[in-house]
Image (tube, rainbow, N blue to C red; front, side, top):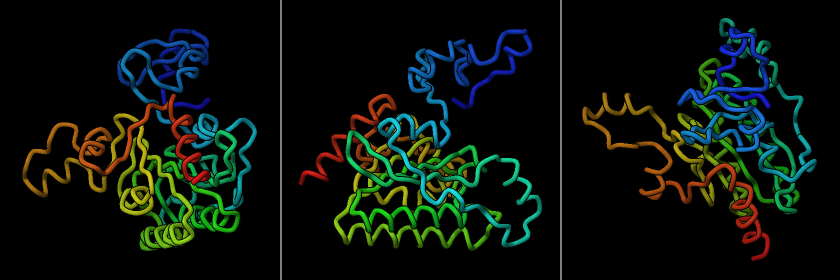
Length: 269
């Protein structure tokens, strides 16, 4: 699995890459196999490594049940923004979200998972389009929807087009609500900017991983604006749960079990 960890230290010391890894927070040396079996969470300090979209899908859905949809859609440099096309090509993936149908505990769902590894998980035209198409698929098949967010917000290289996706995705979710189909929103570190200000916080149930940064503007910007010191833990998932913006904070190893219970409730009601 591809994960954000310090590996160059092992190359420098002549040790085989892929066997050991190093925690980004506490520098604890871990066996890669043990790290993966612990859902990419450091057993020493509890640090949650960021996951790519496909790694996260593997943790959440039933084995071999995921069927990707709209995989061919890729970004276009609408505004001739300098170097934007090159960044897209170098990323190795089409865009910042992967969508598809899957089963979770045997329950059919439509799922969209954002990938922070693609330009900080930024939301551009493709992210908005793929999420809306996923919701339309759910409406047609009468499936509930899961969206996993990991994003720095709207993509500046697409200007107003990226900002339009906020209203576009929110309108699609309103149709889902009208049909009494559930939207389960999972917020991971980080979920910020235009994504937090649109679909990520509109879930019928909002779930978060521990210690995830969630909010619109960053803490430093807010402090400079209001000229006051923010409370300890401000904008982290535990703080938001305490103040009613998150329904539940769930450890990564328990996420699938919680989703199964939620889906059982919605499908059996």
